[in-house]
Each structure stands twice: as C-alpha cells, then as structure tokens.
Amino acid sequence: MITINLLPVREWRKRENVRRQFSIFVLSLILLGCILFAAGASIQAKVALQRQELNQLEDQKRKLAYVNKKIQTVRAKEKEVEEKFKAIEQLQQGRTRTVKILDDIASSIPLDRVWLDRLSLKGKTLSLSGTALDNHTVALFMQRLESTPVFSKVYLKNTKSINYQGHKLMKFDLSINIAQ
Image (tube, rainbow, N blue to C red; front, top):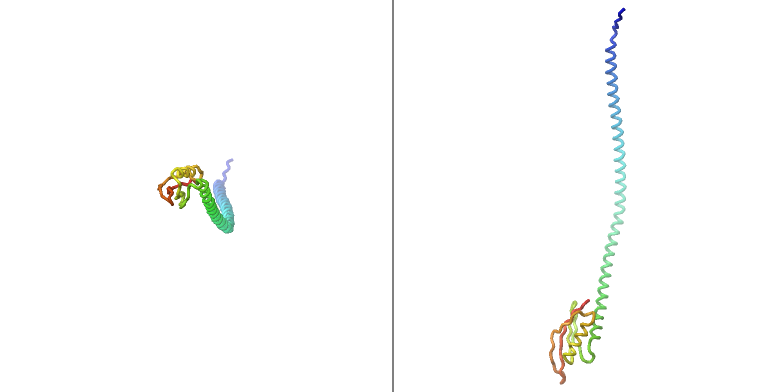
C-alpha cells in the first residue's frame, strides 16, 4: 500500500530553517554589539586612566616649576659670583703685575749710572724716560730689561746728549713690551 503524507513537512522544515538562520543572525548581532561595547568600555577606561595620569604629571610639573625657577636663580647668582671672582683674580694679577714690573726695572738699573724721570704703563706697553751717564749705560740697561721674563722687547725711541752742571749726560726714551 502506498502512503501519502499530506502534512506540509517540507514547508515546516523551510520555516524552521529560516527561523534558525534568523536566530543565528540576531544572536550574532547581539554578540557583535556586546564585543563592541566591551571594547569601547575598555578603551574608555584606558583613556580615563591616561587623562588621570596626565593630570597628575601636570600637577607635578606645576610643583616643580617653582623648584626650576629657584634653580635658575641660583645658577644666575652662581654665574654672577664667578664673574666677580674673575674680576678679583684680574685685579690681583694686575696688582702683582705692577709690583713685578717695578721690581724688574729696579733690579735692572745700573746703580749710580741711570736715573729715571718718567714711567707710564698703558696696556702692555711701558714707556720710560731717564738720564744715563753714557750710551753704553743705556745699552746695558736695555739688555738687562730684555733679559727679564716680564719684558719681551725693549725699543730705544731716542737719545739726546745734554749738559747738566758741567757734566755730559744722555737723555733717553724707551718703549717696552710686556710679555704677560
């Protein structure tokens, strides 16, 4: 015997298949939404954490700005003090330099043969004017000056013969370069 099934099984299967696909689609959309929501929340939490850290760093920066200003003022004062020390050292060197120059001149003068009339120091040039017994004494004085470590070069500007109380003397002018 032949049996015929009059029930619409195929239609039910098609409907069930469509319903299952629709359910899977809706569940996929819900799952995708949950994943996106979780990712967004995670990113928002990281952004909030970074903003909080940035605010803390800016607060520290504001606090340390005061310290930085103090450091700058201390450095400026330190530089000022160093400049003052340099000025003091230059003054000390100038003071001892003049004494050393005068000492070398005094030790170079032939005793009772040369008398100085004028002495002037401008920068690194020393000008001397004086009177000597003769040209040989002037030459000896120049050699002694040149042999000192303070003076580098001694130039004779001029000599002039003069009579002083019946004695023939030599007036001279020297220009001396200072080595230091």
